[in-house]
Length: 256
Image 1 (tube, one colour):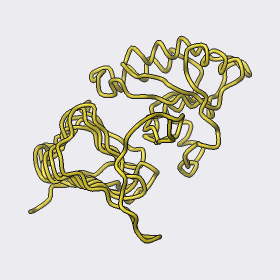
Image 2 (image 1 turned 90 degrees about the horizontal axis):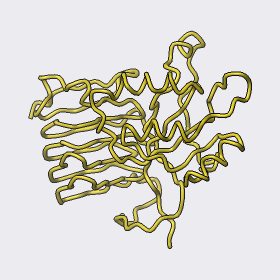
Image 3 (image 1 turned 90 degrees about the vertical axis):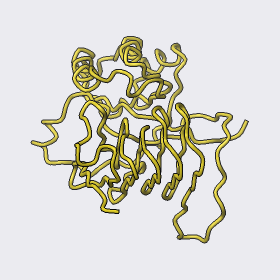
Image 4 (image 1 turned 180 degrees about the vertical axis):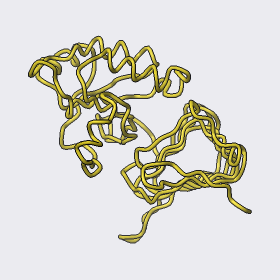
């Protein structure tokens, strides 16, 4: 056994109402139920507004609801002792609170009140448990110099590459179902047909570049877009870049 990082999506719950969560999931993922198929998921209850005081969440019902969308909950944090007992009985792990990722600056109260009660809010990366996994070993660089991971082979469905602490450069096809992740920017010098997640640790200046943009999912610093909203004709299948403008993803064709 050796320590390794496991990449996860996090579901940040803000309401204990499973009916509200079911409605939110249906609205966001109803037309594309497979977009997060078999993705490992962290359940974050730290911001949960509990109805009736410290109402205990039905973790089994929550897990069952998420599995309807082929999500695979593997751990939770911020739970009450009774909720943790439920989770452990279901085979989930407890994620330590001190592993929580940095959150965005709080918004004005009026804006915060307008947020959905339960959403897949941020694409974040967590260290949850020790697993046996082989990962590329980057070359040692001088302190302060950002690391760049270069991949020169096609990525098949189910494969995932994570450039921790720097940029990711891919010189070959990223097939549907493959996932490329970077704490910095992502450069794909080939068709990008899988999922691309840049700024995974919250870098809002990160960008995504592709010679042919056909991605299933694109995300920068927690702001994401799926095929539920088709890519604009101006960039679909073309050389393009994606960047954040405020809290919106801006997609622009590249003139090569």
